[in-house]
Structure formats: C-alpha cells, structure tokens
Amino acid sequence: MFTGIVEEKGQIRGIRPGAKSCILTIEGNRIFSDLQVGDSVAVNGVCLTATSIKGHLFTADVMRETLERSSLGELRAGSHVNLERAMLAGGRFGGHIVSGHIDGTGVIVKIEKDDNAVWYTIQATPQVMKYIVEKGSVAIDGISLTVAAVTDSDFSVSIIPHTASETILSEKRVGQTVNLENDVIGKYVEKLLGAASETKRNQGTATERSQGTAKKAGITREWLAENGF
Image 1 (cartoon, helix red, strand yellow):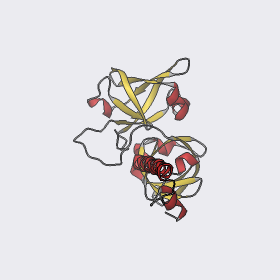
Image 2 (image 1 turned 90 degrees about the vertical axis):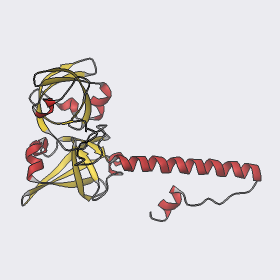
Image 3 (image 1 turned 120 degrees about the vertical axis):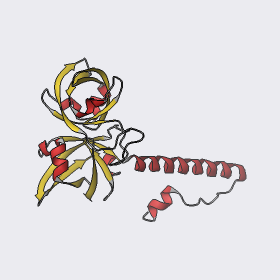
C-alpha cells in the first residue's frame, strides 16, 4: 500500500522490450536507503516489484495488462517518473490509501496558472469519472491530490509549488496522458451496495415463489438513486 506522497523523481535508464511486456531499469536516489529485491515501488502510480538492484538502479518487470491499462508504455529512456516505496506499518499517512492498481488513464486538457498554484484539468472516461468526488481524493501519476472541481467529463486539481517541484506533473503538457487511481473506498462501497441489492432481490424472488405474493422491498440502491441520493 502507498500514500500518494511521492518520495522523489527517478529516471528511466533502460527499457528491454518483450513480445508484449518489458523490463524497466530505473535510477533513483532516496528510495535506495532500504530498498530490497522483492519490494514494491510505485512508478508513476503503478505498483511494480524490484527484481534486481545495483547501486542506484533497480529493474522491474511490466506485464502486458499493466502496459495496456497505464501510461507506462509511453515511457522512453530518459523519461522522469514519480517514485514511492510501499508504506511502512509505523509510517506517517500523509496522503490517502493508494493501492498502485491503476483504474485508467486521463488526458490533460487544460493547464492554468493561478498566482502561486497551477490548475490541471484532466479528462477521463465515465468509468473513472463516476468515482471522482469534489473535495475527494485521487491519485494522478501516483500523487495524492484533492479534487477541486468536477464536471461530467473532467475534473480539476490545484497544485502547490512544492508538489510541482517534487513530482513530474510540472513536466506534463496539454494532451499528455496521466495514470489515474480512484479512491478505493468508493469502489468498495459500490461493490457492497450492489451485493446487498442482489441478495435482497434474490430473497424477494424466493419469498414470492414460496408465498405466491409480492413482498415490498425496503431501502435499496435503486430506491436511493430514484430519490436523488
């Protein structure tokens, strides 16, 4: 598990392509203080496993599924990447719960300076946007950020100078792709509500069959949606 607090900017030193996968060689500095083979490292928000370590370089395998669902396939030798080690059990929780499992990608459609901050507007698919909540959390390329504004097709975040200087977001331009991970809490709530509704429907159907009468359902997910919740 990660927190979305990027520790440093690393650099891609090599990419060894496979048939439908690749091996990345990544250079860093701070993360090597205690990094071991087998440890998890979030690379632009994607959880990868360090398979070898030599000096300030580590390698990581990237499978086809990851290349297809993230922006890692766009990396080139020399590209900068956000790096974060997995959270220690006794560490500070500075961001929010980040799993390193990307939900999808988004495209930067606007970058706008606002005094000492910079606003980034990102367009995403409906599958991602349905979990984006104003003042909620989202991980962009592994950076824990607060959603400042939301529309049906995009959302905006405001970046302070420190975040800009410590991450690769300041290097991004309009039209470029970023990795997005929704707040995991919303996804679990949706799953549990769906399971509860399905169970209630099944119970109601069984009751109707056994008693030959319709039993009026209580509060369901559908009822909440129909009444504006």
